[in-house]
Image: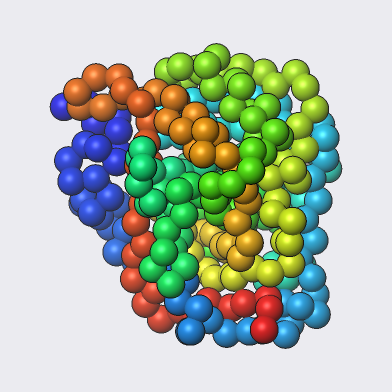
Length: 262
Ligand SMILES: NS(=O)(=O)c1ccc(NC(=S)OCCc2ccsc2)cc1
Ligand SMILES: [Zn+2]
């Protein structure tokens, strides 16, 4: 059996704990955001989240075998303020999505409701030497999550999707030789967010992520959601379309999700 596909080999996410016991840990991700139990924290509004992206920071796009990944050298792309006590540098963005005609696809849910896809913009704490040094530290990473909802087309994201045909298989990679500012992928209102301490949502599931989940989704067209599934991955039954590359929510345990808004 191809073990390559972590979502489709064995029992999938529910079996990850066998190889990664931390899967049953105290600060795992994703979680359901129960808006009746979130807590407004005025400190988050007092020290606004500062999200800086640049036109020249995206270098290449690769098929990781579980998603696409746009990789950055982080130049001019930094995150600070809000829940963060230091400056985090942008490393990469990727996404998770569902199947044709299904509503599931996002990793985080809001009051039990999924979105068709979820974008993750991964940053690492510059108090550490590099990403690999930060990736397993409790304050090592900060990930901005942006929900995708079906609506009007998003031409910016379309420029990234135009590259999908060039990365047909796991490990395939092409350079991005045009300017692309990841700030294009922020929702119109990026002041309202939820934040909590969590983990990577794929193995090795390190409990190293400060999650910043944008309340407002980003609109993309129904065709663009479908184009996500034109990426390919290995499955136990051979190469096929990539979809359902999401971990379902796990227990919140002893955590409170804070809101930057009242
Ligand atoms: N979906 S997620 O944003 O939580 C997310 C982000 C990064 C990763 N893992 C990365 S970028 O690992 C890079 C390779 C690595 C280095 C040390 S251990 C794995 C996994 C999940
Ligand atoms: Zn992710």
